[in-house]
Length: 114
Length: 114
Image (cartoon, rainbow over all chains, first blue to last red; front, side, top):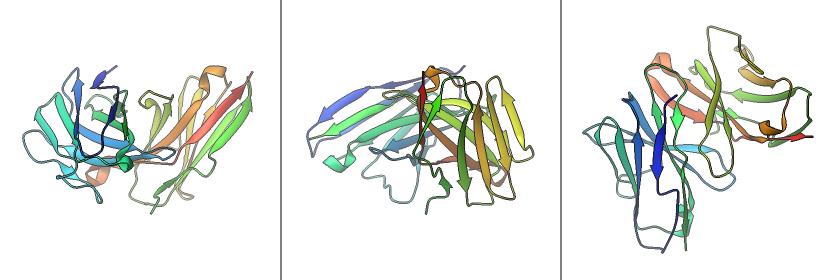
């Protein structure tokens, strides 16, 4: 089955700083996504990471706050900018593979902002 | 607007018995449904999926049932095992409409009692 590597697995950051999360997949995917899971909540889609172009953001999420890059088919980064305690969440990378309809997720990045 | 709902936040089942997790949706364009299992500090793991052209899909101990007219799906786990204790999310997408992004339910915490 597909494997997605995500790092860091966790971090504690000061408010006002930024954190970049990396996501690496082990084979070519057709689509990559970034999700957020706030404490006690469901998974919410932040954006679809598009290769070589700007990400497609969902309502309520903007590029200035969550810049995303996807320089090639198998790698993407999500930056959480100018962090506040409200950004404390688990951030998850996901890939959709052409050979299976089960989207695969990374293990997540648990972010705490203090 | 919660398009995918899991009305039971928690469920406890005796080991060896059947676990039934329920999910309701409101968007009639959803045509593909998935169930995920999530342990703390890990990303969601794909369990089973079903297309809207079917009403049942089975994989080992896991069976998913889809009732399109009621916009309802359920996951049956038989027999339940202690390792099944986790949070279960249902998710949906509108793939035939070119929308592959997943919309998740709020999750049900399943506890299997030995």
